Length: 318
Image (cartoon, one colour):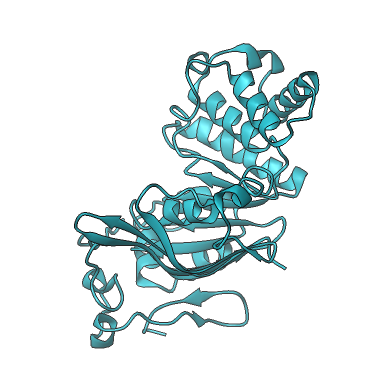
Protein backbone atom coordinates (compact mmCIF):
# COMPACT_ATOMS: atom_id res chain seq x y z
CA UNK A 1 0.00 0.00 0.00
CA UNK A 2 1.41 3.44 -0.92
CA UNK A 3 2.08 5.88 1.92
CA UNK A 4 0.28 8.56 -0.12
CA UNK A 5 -2.07 8.22 -3.06
CA UNK A 6 -3.88 11.04 -4.83
CA UNK A 7 -6.84 10.03 -6.95
CA UNK A 8 -8.40 12.76 -9.10
CA UNK A 9 -7.61 15.61 -6.67
CA UNK A 10 -9.23 18.84 -7.86
CA UNK A 11 -8.67 22.03 -5.86
CA UNK A 12 -10.03 25.47 -6.77
CA UNK A 13 -9.79 28.96 -5.25
CA UNK A 14 -12.78 31.28 -5.05
CA UNK A 15 -11.94 34.85 -6.10
CA UNK A 16 -13.99 37.94 -6.93
CA UNK A 17 -13.52 37.11 -10.61
CA UNK A 18 -14.53 33.43 -10.31
CA UNK A 19 -12.97 30.04 -9.52
CA UNK A 20 -9.24 29.56 -10.12
CA UNK A 21 -8.67 26.00 -11.34
CA UNK A 22 -5.37 25.47 -9.51
CA UNK A 23 -5.23 21.66 -9.51
CA UNK A 24 -7.30 19.52 -11.87
CA UNK A 25 -7.70 15.75 -11.60
CA UNK A 26 -4.23 15.20 -10.06
CA UNK A 27 -3.29 11.55 -9.49
CA UNK A 28 -0.01 10.02 -8.30
CA UNK A 29 1.35 7.89 -5.46
CA UNK A 30 4.36 7.80 -3.12
CA UNK A 31 5.57 4.43 -1.87
CA UNK A 32 7.27 3.79 1.47
CA UNK A 33 10.87 5.03 1.42
CA UNK A 34 10.37 6.63 -2.01
CA UNK A 35 10.88 10.24 -3.08
CA UNK A 36 8.59 11.82 -5.66
CA UNK A 37 9.39 15.10 -7.34
CA UNK A 38 6.60 17.45 -8.43
CA UNK A 39 7.97 19.78 -11.09
CA UNK A 40 6.55 22.70 -13.05
CA UNK A 41 6.80 26.44 -13.54
CA UNK A 42 5.46 28.96 -11.04
CA UNK A 43 1.68 28.92 -10.73
CA UNK A 44 1.19 25.40 -12.09
CA UNK A 45 -0.42 24.08 -8.89
CA UNK A 46 2.49 22.34 -7.13
CA UNK A 47 2.10 24.11 -3.78
CA UNK A 48 -1.70 23.87 -4.01
CA UNK A 49 -1.37 20.09 -4.16
CA UNK A 50 0.89 20.09 -1.06
CA UNK A 51 -1.47 22.36 0.90
CA UNK A 52 -4.43 20.22 -0.17
CA UNK A 53 -2.74 17.09 1.21
CA UNK A 54 -2.33 18.75 4.62
CA UNK A 55 -5.65 20.62 4.31
CA UNK A 56 -3.92 23.93 4.95
CA UNK A 57 -5.47 25.78 2.02
CA UNK A 58 -5.86 29.55 2.45
CA UNK A 59 -9.30 31.14 2.71
CA UNK A 60 -11.20 30.58 -0.52
CA UNK A 61 -9.41 27.31 -1.30
CA UNK A 62 -11.60 24.25 -1.64
CA UNK A 63 -11.07 20.61 -2.55
CA UNK A 64 -13.87 20.09 -5.06
CA UNK A 65 -13.44 16.36 -5.62
CA UNK A 66 -11.00 13.47 -5.48
CA UNK A 67 -9.31 11.43 -2.76
CA UNK A 68 -6.15 11.92 -0.70
CA UNK A 69 -5.31 8.51 0.75
CA UNK A 70 -2.70 8.48 3.52
CA UNK A 71 -1.91 4.88 4.47
CA UNK A 72 -5.26 3.94 2.98
CA UNK A 73 -7.34 6.54 4.86
CA UNK A 74 -8.99 9.37 2.92
CA UNK A 75 -8.03 12.76 4.39
CA UNK A 76 -10.57 14.80 2.38
CA UNK A 77 -13.58 14.28 4.70
CA UNK A 78 -11.53 14.72 7.90
CA UNK A 79 -12.22 17.65 10.23
CA UNK A 80 -9.50 20.08 11.27
CA UNK A 81 -9.37 18.41 14.70
CA UNK A 82 -8.78 15.02 13.09
CA UNK A 83 -6.14 16.48 10.75
CA UNK A 84 -4.10 17.71 13.74
CA UNK A 85 -3.26 14.09 14.48
CA UNK A 86 -2.03 13.64 10.89
CA UNK A 87 -0.02 16.84 10.55
CA UNK A 88 3.56 16.62 11.85
CA UNK A 89 3.19 13.03 13.17
CA UNK A 90 2.03 11.50 9.88
CA UNK A 91 2.83 14.15 7.27
CA UNK A 92 5.08 17.15 7.86
CA UNK A 93 6.11 19.98 5.56
CA UNK A 94 9.11 22.25 5.07
CA UNK A 95 7.52 25.43 3.75
CA UNK A 96 8.98 27.52 0.97
CA UNK A 97 11.13 30.46 2.11
CA UNK A 98 13.39 29.52 5.01
CA UNK A 99 14.13 33.21 5.60
CA UNK A 100 10.59 33.93 6.76
CA UNK A 101 9.35 30.62 8.16
CA UNK A 102 10.76 31.01 11.69
CA UNK A 103 9.38 33.45 14.27
CA UNK A 104 12.07 36.15 14.66
CA UNK A 105 11.34 36.91 18.34
CA UNK A 106 11.72 33.35 19.70
CA UNK A 107 14.85 31.23 19.94
CA UNK A 108 15.06 28.52 17.28
CA UNK A 109 15.29 25.78 19.92
CA UNK A 110 12.15 27.00 21.68
CA UNK A 111 10.22 26.79 18.41
CA UNK A 112 11.34 23.20 17.80
CA UNK A 113 10.56 22.20 21.41
CA UNK A 114 7.12 23.78 21.04
CA UNK A 115 6.46 21.60 17.96
CA UNK A 116 7.50 18.50 19.92
CA UNK A 117 5.42 19.38 23.01
CA UNK A 118 2.34 20.21 20.93
CA UNK A 119 2.08 16.58 19.84
CA UNK A 120 3.50 15.04 23.01
CA UNK A 121 2.25 17.24 25.86
CA UNK A 122 3.24 14.70 28.55
CA UNK A 123 6.88 14.65 27.46
CA UNK A 124 9.11 16.36 30.07
CA UNK A 125 10.77 19.57 28.94
CA UNK A 126 14.27 18.13 29.46
CA UNK A 127 13.47 15.19 27.16
CA UNK A 128 12.02 17.53 24.51
CA UNK A 129 15.25 19.57 24.71
CA UNK A 130 17.35 16.41 24.24
CA UNK A 131 15.31 15.44 21.19
CA UNK A 132 15.77 18.94 19.74
CA UNK A 133 19.53 18.64 20.30
CA UNK A 134 19.64 15.24 18.54
CA UNK A 135 17.59 16.64 15.65
CA UNK A 136 20.04 19.52 15.22
CA UNK A 137 22.97 17.09 15.22
CA UNK A 138 21.13 14.93 12.66
CA UNK A 139 20.84 17.85 10.24
CA UNK A 140 24.43 18.97 10.80
CA UNK A 141 23.98 21.96 13.13
CA UNK A 142 25.68 22.22 16.53
CA UNK A 143 23.16 21.66 19.34
CA UNK A 144 24.42 24.81 21.12
CA UNK A 145 22.83 26.86 18.31
CA UNK A 146 19.38 25.98 19.69
CA UNK A 147 19.72 29.06 21.90
CA UNK A 148 20.22 31.39 18.94
CA UNK A 149 17.56 33.54 17.27
CA UNK A 150 16.70 33.08 13.56
CA UNK A 151 18.57 36.27 12.52
CA UNK A 152 21.78 34.66 13.83
CA UNK A 153 21.44 31.80 11.33
CA UNK A 154 22.49 31.80 7.68
CA UNK A 155 19.95 30.82 5.04
CA UNK A 156 21.29 27.27 4.85
CA UNK A 157 21.20 26.87 8.63
CA UNK A 158 17.60 28.11 8.75
CA UNK A 159 16.67 25.55 6.13
CA UNK A 160 18.34 22.82 8.19
CA UNK A 161 16.50 24.04 11.30
CA UNK A 162 13.18 23.81 9.44
CA UNK A 163 14.00 20.27 8.32
CA UNK A 164 14.84 19.39 11.95
CA UNK A 165 11.49 20.86 13.05
CA UNK A 166 9.64 18.88 10.36
CA UNK A 167 11.24 15.66 11.67
CA UNK A 168 10.38 16.44 15.32
CA UNK A 169 7.52 13.91 15.54
CA UNK A 170 9.01 11.19 13.29
CA UNK A 171 6.66 11.66 10.30
CA UNK A 172 6.15 9.00 7.65
CA UNK A 173 5.97 11.51 4.79
CA UNK A 174 7.98 14.72 4.44
CA UNK A 175 6.88 17.38 1.94
CA UNK A 176 9.56 19.90 0.97
CA UNK A 177 8.35 22.94 -0.97
CA UNK A 178 11.18 24.49 -3.01
CA UNK A 179 13.92 23.69 -0.42
CA UNK A 180 16.55 25.52 -2.47
CA UNK A 181 14.76 28.88 -2.68
CA UNK A 182 17.00 31.91 -1.95
CA UNK A 183 20.05 29.69 -1.33
CA UNK A 184 23.24 29.82 -3.37
CA UNK A 185 24.11 26.71 -5.38
CA UNK A 186 26.69 25.38 -2.90
CA UNK A 187 24.33 25.60 0.10
CA UNK A 188 21.51 24.26 -2.07
CA UNK A 189 23.62 21.20 -2.89
CA UNK A 190 24.38 20.69 0.82
CA UNK A 191 20.67 20.82 1.71
CA UNK A 192 19.81 18.31 -1.04
CA UNK A 193 22.60 16.00 0.11
CA UNK A 194 21.22 16.25 3.66
CA UNK A 195 17.70 15.38 2.50
CA UNK A 196 18.93 12.43 0.47
CA UNK A 197 20.90 11.16 3.49
CA UNK A 198 17.92 11.55 5.85
CA UNK A 199 15.66 9.70 3.41
CA UNK A 200 18.05 6.74 3.32
CA UNK A 201 18.84 6.79 7.05
CA UNK A 202 15.25 7.17 8.32
CA UNK A 203 13.41 5.36 5.52
CA UNK A 204 11.38 8.51 4.90
CA UNK A 205 8.91 8.91 2.10
CA UNK A 206 9.31 12.33 0.50
CA UNK A 207 7.53 14.67 -1.86
CA UNK A 208 9.87 17.32 -3.25
CA UNK A 209 8.34 20.34 -4.99
CA UNK A 210 10.52 22.29 -7.38
CA UNK A 211 10.60 24.16 -10.68
CA UNK A 212 14.06 22.69 -11.37
CA UNK A 213 14.33 19.15 -12.78
CA UNK A 214 18.01 18.94 -11.83
CA UNK A 215 17.18 19.41 -8.12
CA UNK A 216 14.55 16.67 -8.28
CA UNK A 217 17.00 14.33 -10.04
CA UNK A 218 19.39 14.61 -7.07
CA UNK A 219 16.91 13.15 -4.58
CA UNK A 220 13.90 11.52 -6.26
CA UNK A 221 13.15 8.21 -7.94
CA UNK A 222 9.95 9.40 -9.63
CA UNK A 223 8.68 12.69 -10.98
CA UNK A 224 5.29 14.20 -11.81
CA UNK A 225 5.42 17.02 -14.38
CA UNK A 226 2.66 19.59 -13.81
CA UNK A 227 1.38 22.23 -16.19
CA UNK A 228 -1.55 24.58 -15.51
CA UNK A 229 -2.94 22.40 -12.73
CA UNK A 230 -2.64 19.08 -14.59
CA UNK A 231 -0.11 16.25 -14.31
CA UNK A 232 0.97 15.86 -17.94
CA UNK A 233 3.71 13.24 -17.45
CA UNK A 234 4.61 10.88 -14.62
CA UNK A 235 7.21 8.18 -14.18
CA UNK A 236 10.71 7.20 -13.13
CA UNK A 237 13.08 10.15 -13.19
CA UNK A 238 15.76 8.38 -15.29
CA UNK A 239 13.27 7.34 -17.94
CA UNK A 240 11.77 10.81 -18.23
CA UNK A 241 15.23 12.40 -18.53
CA UNK A 242 16.21 9.82 -21.14
CA UNK A 243 12.97 9.90 -23.15
CA UNK A 244 10.65 12.82 -22.33
CA UNK A 245 7.36 12.32 -24.14
CA UNK A 246 5.14 15.32 -23.44
CA UNK A 247 6.03 18.44 -25.48
CA UNK A 248 6.10 20.48 -22.26
CA UNK A 249 8.61 18.10 -20.64
CA UNK A 250 10.68 18.19 -23.83
CA UNK A 251 10.58 22.00 -23.73
CA UNK A 252 11.68 22.08 -20.07
CA UNK A 253 14.64 19.81 -20.77
CA UNK A 254 15.46 21.73 -23.96
CA UNK A 255 15.78 24.91 -21.90
CA UNK A 256 18.11 23.22 -19.40
CA UNK A 257 21.89 23.36 -20.03
CA UNK A 258 23.94 20.17 -19.69
CA UNK A 259 27.64 19.93 -18.82
CA UNK A 260 27.88 16.51 -20.48
CA UNK A 261 27.56 15.31 -24.06
CA UNK A 262 27.01 17.35 -27.17
CA UNK A 263 26.66 21.12 -26.76
CA UNK A 264 23.22 22.22 -27.93
CA UNK A 265 21.52 25.56 -28.26
CA UNK A 266 18.98 26.15 -25.49
CA UNK A 267 15.40 26.40 -26.70
CA UNK A 268 12.72 28.40 -24.87
CA UNK A 269 9.02 27.56 -24.79
CA UNK A 270 7.12 30.30 -26.67
CA UNK A 271 4.07 32.02 -25.21
CA UNK A 272 2.77 32.33 -21.66
CA UNK A 273 1.04 29.94 -19.22
CA UNK A 274 -2.76 30.18 -19.39
CA UNK A 275 -4.96 32.14 -17.01
CA UNK A 276 -6.33 29.52 -14.61
CA UNK A 277 -9.46 31.61 -14.09
CA UNK A 278 -10.33 30.89 -17.69
CA UNK A 279 -8.06 28.12 -19.01
CA UNK A 280 -8.34 27.07 -22.66
CA UNK A 281 -10.60 24.09 -23.39
CA UNK A 282 -8.83 20.81 -23.92
CA UNK A 283 -5.12 20.54 -23.21
CA UNK A 284 -3.91 23.74 -21.48
CA UNK A 285 -0.54 23.46 -23.27
CA UNK A 286 -2.17 23.50 -26.73
CA UNK A 287 -1.68 27.28 -27.37
CA UNK A 288 2.11 26.83 -26.90
CA UNK A 289 2.53 23.32 -28.34
CA UNK A 290 4.41 22.87 -31.64
CA UNK A 291 2.51 19.60 -32.31
CA UNK A 292 -1.01 20.85 -31.56
CA UNK A 293 -3.93 19.10 -33.28
CA UNK A 294 -7.62 20.04 -33.42
CA UNK A 295 -8.60 17.47 -30.79
CA UNK A 296 -6.09 19.04 -28.36
CA UNK A 297 -8.25 22.17 -28.30
CA UNK A 298 -11.44 20.41 -27.23
CA UNK A 299 -10.68 17.63 -24.72
CA UNK A 300 -7.88 16.97 -22.21
CA UNK A 301 -6.21 13.64 -23.08
CA UNK A 302 -6.37 10.74 -20.65
CA UNK A 303 -3.09 9.48 -19.16
CA UNK A 304 -1.68 6.64 -21.25
CA UNK A 305 0.81 4.10 -19.95
CA UNK A 306 3.92 3.86 -22.13
CA UNK A 307 5.89 0.61 -22.12
CA UNK A 308 5.91 -1.87 -19.24
CA UNK A 309 7.01 0.53 -16.48
CA UNK A 310 5.29 3.36 -14.64
CA UNK A 311 5.58 5.96 -17.36
CA UNK A 312 2.35 7.83 -18.10
CA UNK A 313 1.77 10.74 -20.47
CA UNK A 314 -1.34 12.80 -21.23
CA UNK A 315 -0.91 13.73 -24.88
CA UNK A 316 -2.76 12.90 -28.12
CA UNK A 317 0.58 12.29 -29.86
CA UNK A 318 0.51 8.89 -28.19
